[in-house]
Structures are given as C-alpha cells and as structure tokens.
Figure 1 (cartoon, rainbow, N blue to C red):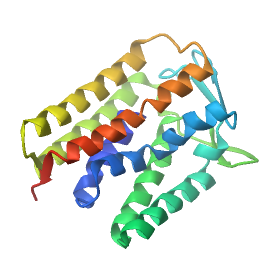
Figure 2: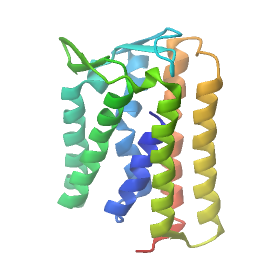
Figure 3: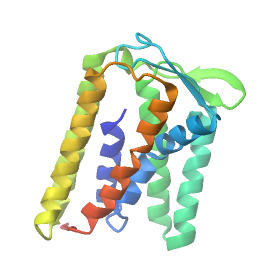
Amino acid sequence: MFIGHFAVGLGGKNAAPQVKLGTLFMAAQFLDLLWPAFLILGFEHVKIDPGNTAFTPLDFYDYPLSHSLLTSIGWSVLFGGIYFYLKKNLRNSLILGTAVFSHWLLDFFTHRPDLPLAPGIQYYLGLGLWNSITGTILVEGTLFVTAIITYTKFTKPIDRTGNFAFWGMMALLLFSYIANIASPPPPTMMAIAYAGLAQWLFIAWGYWIDRHRTWNA
C-alpha cells in the first residue's frame, strides 16, 4: 500500500476535522516512516527480489520492530498517547491511534505472509493481495478516489493555494505510485531507505494544505 495509506489520512479528516491533515498523514504512514530509519540504522533489513510478489520486487524478511502485529499495536498506543498528552482530546487521540494501526491492517491484506506476529516469534501474517497487480490497483485506487471525494466534499479552499496545494499533492502521489509500479527494482537497500524518508515531504505538504483549506461540514 502507498496511496491507500494516504487515503486513510484524507478520510480521517472527516472523523477528526480539528486534527491537522499532516498529523493524520503522519499517523496513517507512521510504520513506513519508522521503517526507512530502521533500515539505515541496521535494525531491520529488506531484500531486492524481483518476482517476490507480482506487485513489488521487495522481500520484507526482517522488519519486526516497525511492522509486527505486537509492535504496531504499541506504536498506535504511543502515537495516540502522545497526542492526548499534548492536546487532551481523547476522541482525536483514539482516531489517530486507529489510523496508525490501519497501516498494519492494510498491509495485512496486501502483503504475502511476511508480517511478523511479534519480534522473535517466527509466525507470519498476510493475505497476499500483492500477488495480483490488477487487484491491488483496484483496491488501492478505490480507497484513494473515495478519500479524495470525501475530503473535497467536507473541505473547501480559502484561497487559490488551497486548490493548488491539494490537487498538486494528489497528482504527485498518483505519479509516484505509477512510477513505483513501472520503474525497475531499486539498486540497493539504502536506496530504498532514503527514498522512504522522502515521505516526510508529504507530511509537511499536508500541513501546508491545511493552512489553506477550511472545514465545510
């Protein structure tokens, strides 16, 4: 998943309009924001293995800290807990914690069985939607389009930047998604890691969008 996770962030604005869009994006992508940092630090590893699934050439054979079921629950509680400590809003904290855990749930549907149950436990989960390129694109594309429709229904731009920033980001997300499918496999694990860190650009972009759009419910 890629645009599917950002779809959760967009959809979350409907449930928690007071929460900044950048924060919602950060929650929905939190596990994948941790993962490249853990690759760089040597805590986790990934292999480049064309044919591993039809959709991705990556073999996610070692990422128990960022993507196991147990640690994903822990990251969800931590993220929601920090937000509650800062904002004292239980409802929004629960929504953000759920957004963090939604990442694992979407990965569970798409990954082959490579999601660890917990660090040190050799039991793996995943339903393998990535074995079908068509199925993956249909599911993820539907999530993305639905989230855009919902977001634009309940928000409106307060200036020209509000339109430009939002639609510019949607176009770049879609372009990145298509390029990832069509491009050759990345050359090294570190190339994957540094490319993954670029996702922080979209988090910052989300905060920019929020400053130029208003809730319209």
